[in-house]
Image (tube, rainbow over all chains, first blue to last red; front, side):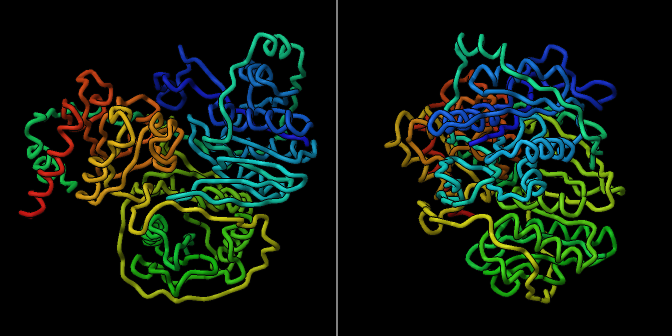
Length: 246
Length: 318
């Protein structure tokens, strides 16, 4: 089975969020970048588990500049076999999806996995766009994935429970918590990753469909009003009269 | 050129998230000086309740019976074409996340998801980024536009009208997915977490699953849904679907009461859209107090029953 995993770079979850250039760009100064957690912990690790159990290969794909190479090497250290990087500074999800779809079609993958969303753009659209561009079924927010020959069984959460779906390969899946456990790369993996292939390819020249005009931080939160633990009536009163939520 | 809105349904009725999207779409239609059409699929009963939110017409793809994103995208495209719709609106809920990206590709439309504002004059919209820690203003470069709104960001906007229901059978091919089984553990009358206006949530401070009774009592008295922090669902004290936070469900209730949750940044990312946050924690240094509107420093096992009792007497007097 040939598996393609979409990997994106994201600021560490504890990063200070600030903007520059008149609030038109994210200020990367002092920010540490990681593999987007949904891509790494769930999509990539499940892909590696499937390969270990059934054979085949795991290729990662990233759309971005050379500044993505450290996170790509980490994915290789965790256990991906090789990597593709489409060398472009994408402006929106459609550009990213289109570049990945071109590579996915050329490579003839059976399964394409991505995280449910990135923690910086929170779009959650790459998987769906990819599926449409590849004319493949798509199941977002999967919490379990099993593959049996040419059929996949996918579990996903629904309000108050879960549902189990079947779909034929080739298939696109977005991964949510539950699909796999995080793996920490070991020294052997890190050494091996250095000699694995990271193929840099040129972009196709697709245009973006949307454009971020500016960013803004939310207004600062007011101070917390403390209420005496002996007097919860006061809280009820404030929720009713002041906050007007009950 | 109408505005088109996608409607999901459960038990024959439009979902709450869909009704919110219909209300939003009606405002967009008013803004553009046009009317509002809706698209749904087999299983919706009559208009599913969307007439109360301003939809003039509902197209029901009677040949699509499972929520297959590939088939639904083709049905939405057919309805958009029949209506000449250049603006298509979704709720960014579980089905919207599957269908909207496919529709955007089919229509060659720009797509913005998780939208938290009404469109501006040039239909530019605002969305949450960095897991709720910032907002981005995004403009479209395409003639056709797909807007997917963040659930609970707008609330319900009733707008009584009469919806004309039309069944059609668009060319959608075969379904790419089949539903093998559905397992729900929620009892009847339980409020689905993503739709809840009021949420009572608890964490490791509860010391064990056997202590959840006081949380459930408070939630019941309030008419709230229950939720929990990640460690609590990871150790199996509570079901996974109750886990709110960055890796769990992201919610935006009007009131979020957090009991015995320290307030790790990953938890805050899932609840920072809440209108009002109340934190009960015995540790006055708990980071959650920095994000709270109201705080009580105290032992949950004493504070929560008192709060439930106070709420009971408040309700008796109002």
